Length: 351
Image 1 (cartoon, rainbow, N blue to C red):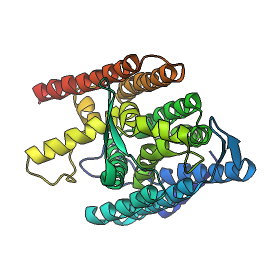
Image 2 (spheres, rainbow, N blue to C red; image 1 turned 60 degrees about the horizontal axis):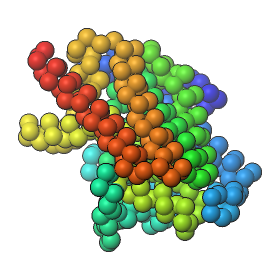
Image 3 (cartoon, rainbow, N blue to C red; image 1 turned 180 degrees about the vertical axis):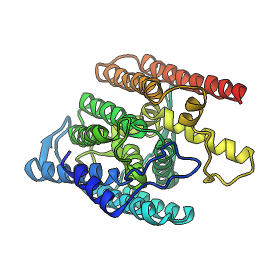
Image 4 (cartoon, one colour; image 1 turned 120 degrees about the vertical axis):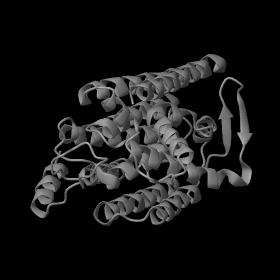
């Protein structure tokens, strides 16, 4: 709320507007640096928190707000945000953005935030990744960054999706006793809530690549954020998160949209980074939905996904059946996949 009005004034003064082209929905000059506002908000609030509350008593032991793991994560976040900021002004080639994201992801992996296995819901089996854990972690962070980037095409869509996901992950952290992870998640949710004041329809500012890449990268990593480099509590949480289960659930809309885009472009023999107007929001607009109705539909699904992961966490915290908890998540996935299948064929029939 403090940073964004200043960014708006500077953007209008220097004409830092989002480029209008055939793929974009907006037709007026609109600033594109809203991501700078919620990035700075997240960083400043996190620093203040770490200074005034350097340690917390977690479910296992006293844990540090700025562990080595979290410090390297923040370095990676600066890199991703800077990469997106440069791209907002100069349109960096896809290969250079990929290299930058790989380096940022490697920093997170070096810090110890590694997916060491893939959890299979209902079966209850963890496939160990062993030496591949670092590469899989980097691939995961890059994928979520791009998923959020691709869905950022409608007022309030990416920001609202990120807000619901961050809040749900924060509640899961609280339930499981990871208080530093909860605090960082809620800080992000608060920053996004303030951003949406300016990004709701009709948007005064867009988040741009500096915001969408940062948001996706952080959402992909939020489940890793803890206060201790080695903690049985964090390891227990990571065993679940290792299979991407929690983040896949709360971000199922952008993830499925990204997978659909990749398959669509491969089918059409186009590069997977080739832009088009076949994303979720484009299809819903093509079917006659208004911007507000699209937000109600998508965020309604996002809320259901958030409730699913919170229900899973409550079930786990109070010793419920793992099968019952997993069933909730699988049902949520089926709902999300069914929505996209219906949307795909309904839209094609209208073309």
